[in-house]
Length: 209
Image 1 (cartoon, one colour):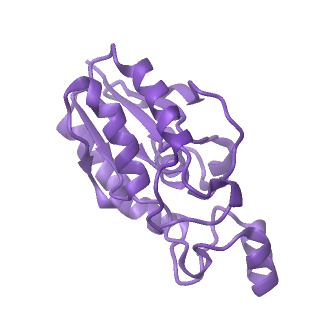
Image 2 (cartoon, helix red, strand yellow; image 1 turned 60 degrees about the horizontal axis):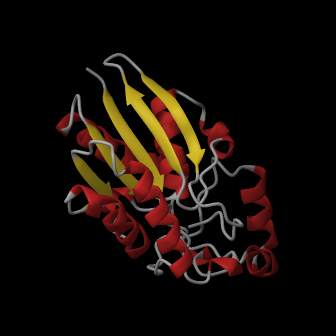
Image 3 (cartoon, one colour; image 1 turned 90 degrees about the vertical axis):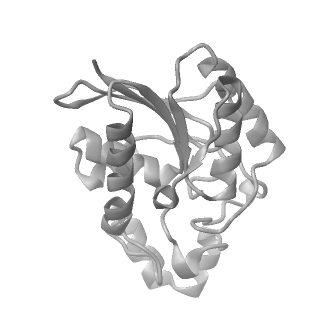
């Protein structure tokens, strides 16, 4: 019997329209984000969920609580599922970063998958903390179904690792706000049966949360 993981990116956040690099900053879920997550929770309401896990950042925990409520569950916080640590770039827009450090911004644009954020993390470091946490969740619920609510970067890393994709394919795996992707473990390999599905359409204010 396989294991199903409903992998969710948190809903839209307060200030998302500014398109700032958020990373480990603890910003709140916006009213739009709450509506997005309520719509997604309605989709998942009729499914069996054994547990709901979440990054410990506020925007993810609030999103996970909305998903968990119809199932009578309480979201379990897992700090290792946090977004990329973006270091000195957190709270800044792309234009601000380009103005402050154009060479670093160019280096990031040239190698998004391999670049280490100044005083932050690179993709390998994110994978080193997030993948073991993901594996532990799957082992704990073998043969069951769980929801995992995290972030754009974290979810992409998990899917790349599960599907055996090179890190350079990271951005090919869309992760919009409140989007649902479904990973299924057969006992031998992972399959992706749904990618980046949104119940409530909206403009995409940010890709860095």
